[in-house]
Length: 85
Image 1 (cartoon, rainbow, N blue to C red):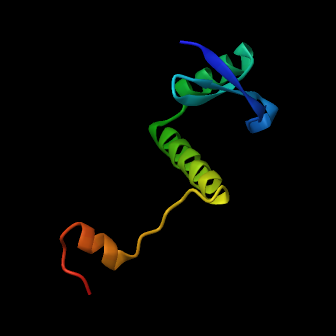
Image 2 (image 1 turned 90 degrees about the horizontal axis):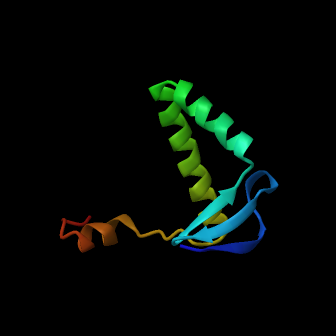
């Protein structure tokens, strides 16, 4: 598997790479170790809150890039074979 550097910078000014179909952030090993230690010490609720916050950041980035797609509720119901109206 090879990594391809993406032009521009990611969060906190870190480099971005494309690796195995995913975009990854390159961080110093000390920062990675610190984040892993924080993750190990975090409560289940803290981890769930962090996942929610990360998902919201992804949604906002997609929204800013115009990638989010909205489907009216009646169309969703029709696609699922549910009664509309």
